Length: 368
Image 1: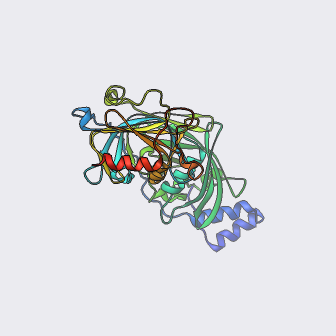
Image 2: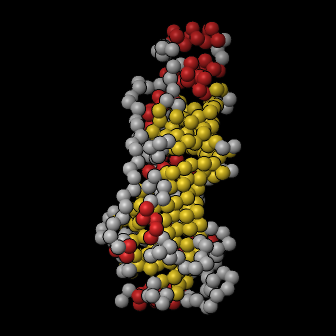
Image 3: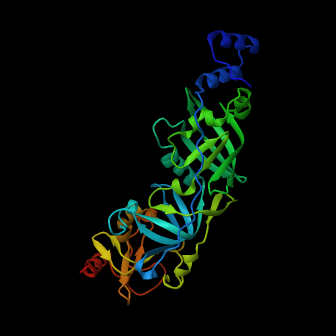
């Protein structure tokens, strides 16, 4: 259908024919808001992860298990497991205090996202740019679909609800394929757009300026490794599925994942932890060589709740032990429990640990 320019006479004729119905007013708003088309962005294929070379102890590795890694202060993505190589991006040594100083090249991972996590990623990262056409987004996962509630802005604010099926594409991107959209509380949004000969990409200005996302036709595409906060990750999705109210992402397992369980061996019996092993790592005023830093959840009755930018507060609220190989075994309090508990011993059982003050003294002495 040829798109007809909106003029005062055309609008008057349309209203006369329709009896001034709300639908025609919406049509007029959408047509007047539609901008000239621009080239559609295309997804770049995700390269296969390079195989790490050299001896395992000359590289820094990390393993995370049953960790809620915060996106912001209130929402987190859940790492059932994540294993990979830590690669320096700034300076000479990765700094735990600065998540932008390193990236993780994933060798294997299973990551889940619920509605609040997807909401945070989309609002804080994907659509967080000047002139974004999508605002106040709230996402839920229902009946195998991603349900987005928010406001599209194209000359006017258009409240919408859109259901979409997530599908993994051959290039590793995730396509959100809409099944329905309602605007202004009940009008069929896609029927309206298609009657005008336009698609969602035009309404969204082709998402020019979006971070880790693009739109083609009515489909929105996400680049999973580009829409998360620091530290950056490098890897490729192997599968994507919906489990209840969770989107589950499985990453391709690379050949050098065999370093885990051989060189990188977590503490026996630990269920919730972050482990760094291998080359150098800095945290606080300390630099570890031949790093062996095992950070365990002090209360493993629920997932390990971690906000990297506040990890030192979690550390101070916990305690530590030196290991026989001169490594450190640290027990940290969940981020959501800060200010509520100050541990002096493990939750459950175990020998008496260090106090928070003794923890700082041990860390200081280990740096000499």
